[in-house]
Length: 142
Image 1 (cartoon, rainbow, N blue to C red):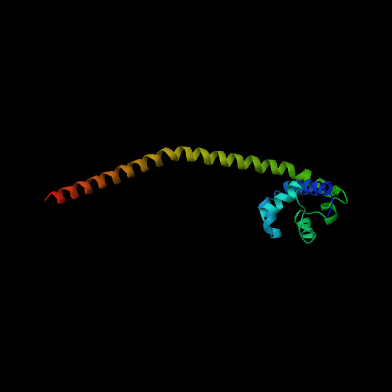
Image 2 (cartoon, rainbow, N blue to C red; image 1 turned 90 degrees about the vertical axis):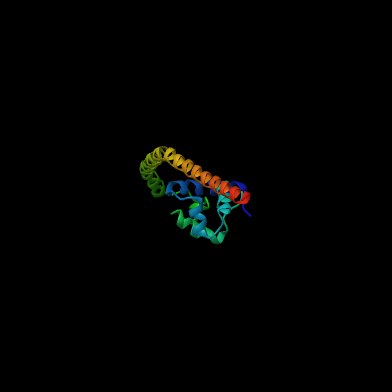
């Protein structure tokens, strides 16, 4: 078993590459056929990925196994790609935020109409139930 210092280094690399590539914990777990909690443990340094999973994880993260293990620093090419991706990621984030804001505004406009319609439907149901109750009482009295 390796020492905890190496786990942290691997976890830092995992998180950095995951962010740079826009991968979710779920994406990694699905690709490696492990639970999301297992990936979470790798990210926090609580556990490390099994040796058998490392080649596939490294490929997913677009680095070598040696880079993943912290045996060699990330290549200049990998770091250059990360820097180029940042503006693109920021653009995507801003676009997603704008889309979310528009969706929220649309929901806020639609919500009052929906609430009014539901209230009307509830009133109609109550009125029908009252009529049935009245009819049943009259029928029992006869």
